[in-house]
Every structure is written in structure tokens, then in C-alpha cells.
Image (cartoon, rainbow, N blue to C red; front, side, top):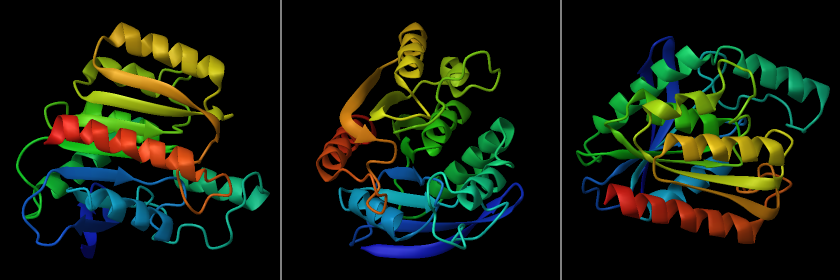
Length: 247
């Protein structure tokens, strides 16, 4: 496995990234891996490495390049802690919908230009806040993004909010997958219900399901709520999605 640390030219500077590709490095389908609020770290490197070993060139990026290089938290990240909440707000503030659209285009342009990436459609996957970013990525480049997945994606449906991620669905042509946590304040049961109605109205190919007994963040190994069995199930869903759309 080749693991290469890189800098991506971006609209507002340069973004840290890591490109994973199996050996021998024959051109393979490309996948954009969008991490959670903790950005690039060992947990997400391991997740990207695992996906790449299935036969993909995987680009793990730092969505918070405007604010910080990794590690983006200079102290232990504790859910609900005042410092953690303040830092999350600092990291998220520059990521307006327009910034996310521009960033998605830059990530895709960089990924598809790599020699290890085979010409053709790519996939995107996001975790927690970046579940919405994966959806916006599919909307930013419909001809290029054939599949997008979100795991414990927060705020996918925001009632009466003109910037709600679900509103980009009409632009999307990708096949979509959404894995929700049964215990998630950022995407509760009512929000999931409304989001699934929006998906049905969209009319594209999708799957949306709730993982019972799972909490927000359950797929990421360094999270206290990591659920190994449900994380393995989620990984199986992800590889099935990409095998059906990128091969």
C-alpha cells in the first residue's frame, strides 16, 4: 500500500491530504474520503487504508484547511466540553455551502488528475458533519460522482433552512447511501423521516437505513461510541455501493 501525504491547491490556500493506493499501483477507481470534525488522524488514515485495500485510490482530505492543519484540535476532543464546542464552531465557520461546493470541485479535480486514478466516475464518503459534504460533492459534479455515502451524517435535513443539505438533491445523479444512528441528536428520528421523504421525492437510486443501538460517530475507531459490529456492517454497505457504481 502506498500512502502519500500531499498538499492540494484550493480556492483559499492549500489543503492537507493523504492519497492511498494499493501496490502495484495500477489505475483504480477514485474515492474521496471526507473525515469527521477531527479531520486527518490515525483513525481516518486507517479507515481510508482499509477502503483502498478493496481496490480504490482513496484521497483523505482536511476540510478545515482554511483554519488549521492537522491536528485540528490542539487538546483532547471531548463531546459537550466548552473548549471542544468552541473549536468546532471555529472550524466549521468558513465552510459555507458555497465554500463546500468550490472545495468539492477542487478535491475532484486533484483526485482525477492522479496517475493512480482510473478515468471514469468517482465516489465520495463522509462521516458526521461531512455526510452532508459528501452529498454536496455529488451535487457539485453530477457527471463525475457516481456514488456518495454518508454515515451518521448530521443536519442532513434542516426544516425551514434555505441552506439545508437536502435541497441539493435535485442536482444529484449519483447513487446514494445513508446510514443513520438510532441515537443521534444531530439527526433525530423526525429529521430522518423528513429526509427520507425528500429522497423519495428526488426519485434517484438510494438506500437510507438506521443502525439500531448505534450512536453518532459509531463507525470511527477512536470515538468512545465506536461499535465494531455495526461499523463492519457499514463498511460492507460502502464497498457494495462502490462495487456497483465504480467498477
